[in-house]
Image (cartoon, rainbow over all chains, first blue to last red; front, side, top):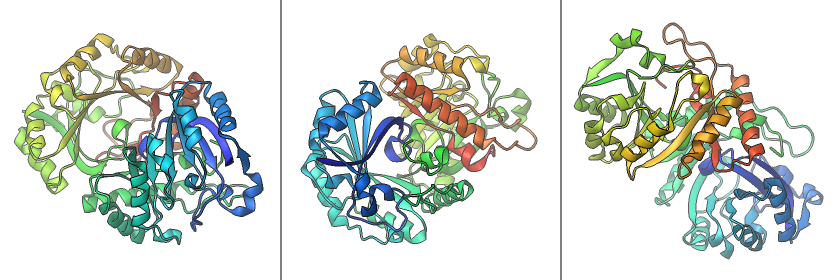
Amino acid sequence: MIRISEIFGPTIQGEGALIGQPTVFVRTGGCDFRCSWCDSLHAVDSRFRDDWRPMHATEIWAEVTRLSGGVPLTVSLSGGNPAIQPLGDLIALGQAQGYRFAMETQGSVARDWFAALDLIVLSPKPPSSGMDSRAGDLAACLAAAGAARAVLKFVIFDEADYLWSRAMAASFPGLAVYLQPGNPLPPPGDGPEPDPDTPDLLARMRWLIDRVAADRWFSAHVLPQLHVLLWGNRRGV
Amino acid sequence: MIRISEIFGPTIQGEGALIGQPTVFVRTGGCDFRCSWCDSLHAVDSRFRDDWRPMHATEIWAEVTRLSGGVPLTVSLSGGNPAIQPLGDLIALGQAQGYRFAMETQGSVARDWFAALDLIVLSPKPPSSGMDSRAGDLAACLAAAGAARAVLKFVIFDEADYLWSRAMAASFPGLAVYLQPGNPLPPPGDGPEPDPDTPDLLARMRWLIDRVAADRWFSAHVLPQLHVLLWGNRRGV
């Protein structure tokens, strides 16, 4: 059984390597991290665990098929940390019908089924998160992913995060890098979502672009969270 | 000699397939089209031709090298229509030093040197432009580009543009497709740039995402113009 927080779409992937691409999100419930600025607490904090529905891979697949009208697209596996759920059967079911699977994880837990993914996004958490992401754990995830395409994504709030990300990226020179300004007003998880401060988010993005340009870190990409710009901190879009 | 409107950067590519990637822009002056909503009139309208500087490829290359500190990145060739300038020597100069070259053109004019590009973005103009982009001209550009990576980009203002783009894309099933909501408040070319109507731009983006989802056009990407969100209609960023 897989613990599911929400399944929604089609919408676009709003971040990172697949930005702009139509996708259905499958968000699992539960996480081994608890980042200070988590923007998906409803899928992380155990006080929401009663909202997470245990589902068979076949049930999840029926819902993805319904939402996508049976037309293959990329399914985005997100969380929480989807790596702590048994997702191999779901991936096999979908790929048999021509769907592709991308997963985002902090890279703390490696699984054999990573090798079946079409894309694995490793998003280690920088110092501002209060977590301790380790290069060794990422390396284990990459080893599990084998020949699957892998990229790095870093959420950056400040100079310390930036420098940490730059050093971590240097440990994995073969991986494309995506930098994303952090959103300091995440949803509280319950209650109404606060509106994001869009001018502040865009200022953070400009700062990050200037930072990368000044360092001539030309192999990095800098991208915003399109979902936050388009829909604020709303869920299910 | 190459007629240059402006050279600036490093900044990020704000649109399409290379969105988020650091780049230096080389914008040529002069265009064989005159789109009703052109957002680069300063590089298109012949009343600005005295602002376009004739430069040798070596001069342009010296400026790109200065701006990028000699660290290889992707150079974005834009315009105007860069295809009406002789850019083969510039591309050869840069590639010899490890730089990559992406060019965006409406696809009205084909050149042999397209084959040297790392990416050619064909951006045929939909009905709202008042121009007449033809599939046959795009096919000639693709033939010239040979094995170079090619993608399609469509600027979409309304339903007619959307349907036209969908039909045009269907003629080139091998190409990745990028859809971009149009910006109805382009700079006037001279005088102060008007501020973009950001809420309107984001609403256009949401409409386009809904449109693609409703049609299950899952092979298309939907992306905004990040530059307009970040810097308004300012030039040189």
